[in-house]
Amino acid sequence: MATLDQASYEQLQQQEAQLSQKFQQLQQQQLDLDLTRGKPSAAQLDLSKELDGILNGDYRDSGGADLRNYGGLDGIAEAKQLFSTLAGVKNTEILIGGNSSLTLMYFCAQIALERGLTTDRTPWRQDQRAVKFLAPVPGYDRHFSLCQHLGIELIPVAMNDAGPDMEQVESLLHADPDIKGIWCVPRFSNPSGIVYCDDVVQRIAKLSKIAGPNFLVFWDNAYAVHSLEEGAPPLANIMDYCRNEGTEDSVLIFGSTSKITLAGAGVAYVAGSPGNLEELKKHLGFMSIGPDKMNQLRHVRFLRDAGTIAAHMQKHAAIMKPRFDAVLQALQSSLGNLGLGEWTEPRGGYFISFDSRPGLAREIVSLAAQLGVKLTPAGATFPGGNDPRDCNIRLAPTYPSVEDINKAMEVFVTCVKLASVRQQLNTPTN
Ligand code: PLP
Image (cartoon, rainbow, N blue to C red; front, side, top):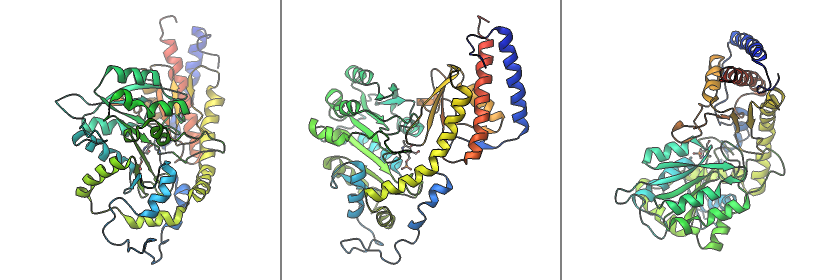
């Protein structure tokens, strides 16, 4: 296929006819495939089978407490020890919760809104003023819907290869005192897979100096240990930078084992300054008598230490890498050098981010649906579902088999080509 800009009107018509024919052939296959879900595959979940029954009648923690009973609002000591190494904080700077980091994010945002966190303790919601968050885009739709649900306005910020555009972030904060937070997925971002560079991490650690003492960075490190290959870029430790700046209060670090062990049945944590954790515990005590400590103990016995976790994550990578490769090979072999789209080649995480020519993402998703391939709704990676250039599509390769990915990608690239050729045919110069 010649590049669209070079093709004559007749060549474009010919391409359109060929692609429409291909579209009809694919339609006859009556496929039913799904590339939307950022879920682990069954083979990945099987890696954690050992969790089931691992306690084997021994329900006591290292201090001898019977964990079958109430208590321990902020988690068991062993879990704090294990997960503080993942979060890169001291074991006095972490609270171990239930099964979902998203729940902890919601909880923290709500407390900061209504009651106030940080040593400043001024609630975000005051004097009828708007409360705003910066949302690097493309980003994670649940972060956006969480804010919308709580009445927090989202201001999109561009992402580049090294993280959020920090010039833009800093100038927005200088201009608008109602901005109270920023979402960050700093390692293997959802959906672009990029890793924030050291300079960006360092600048984020200083943001409260611009934004004021009740500003909070929501550092959602959901993919902290989710490399697909050896040598994937590491992430600088934000808490260390905060210590240097005296801004420990401005960062809340979130994580969970949803994509290490069992999705929705793992263990989640929030790390932050002891002052922030004390304040959170005060409120948590009204919601709960304590978390599921049995599951925390199961996870500690299974995951043991950083080395065991790294070895376990290599097993995940061995299952996931061929799926990512299948997507990337299809994109490269069918769309490479045609100028019909750009995509990320992540070295970890759960997603590949694809950008079509502007104005085509919705059309591509709709064409693929007609062929029985579900894609993440266009716009989902932007606040309010509104991608102003209508070009970003999140591809999630982890759940389907390689065979299904190959079929789904044949559909995807056909739809990208068809939508692009039709758009070119309809542009006024033709
Ligand atoms: N954060 C990010 C960036 C995610 O991609 C996901 C799930 O896809 C979550 C959080 C959800 O985490 P949890 O299962 O701990 O609530």
